[in-house]
Length: 145
Image (cartoon, rainbow, N blue to C red; front, side, top):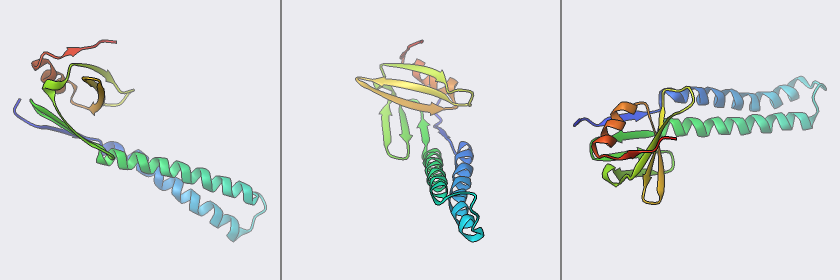
């Protein structure tokens, strides 16, 4: 395999993006509608709490969206490049001592935990067979849980 396989999560970023937009929209519209209509159904404390919870959930959606857009894994026969929202990792496959592979819930992604000396690096990819083939070419031991 001389090809470089590139994998990302751009398709999976739609749900957090939509949740973020919806929550931020509620965070803005709920207090606005309360003061424009001047309805006494909710107190000011209730509106403030609704705003805060919608803002918090919108911020969590923003983080999930940005993380999914920025996540990128590239691997070939010799190296693995992992780029996330906060860090970039480049590692040689020959440095990996052991690995585990599990499917992530019901998604299309598989999680590989790569053990390098005293570090553990988590890689999410859809290309399970290709990545395992590269690891098995280097005779790296798989830990089965």
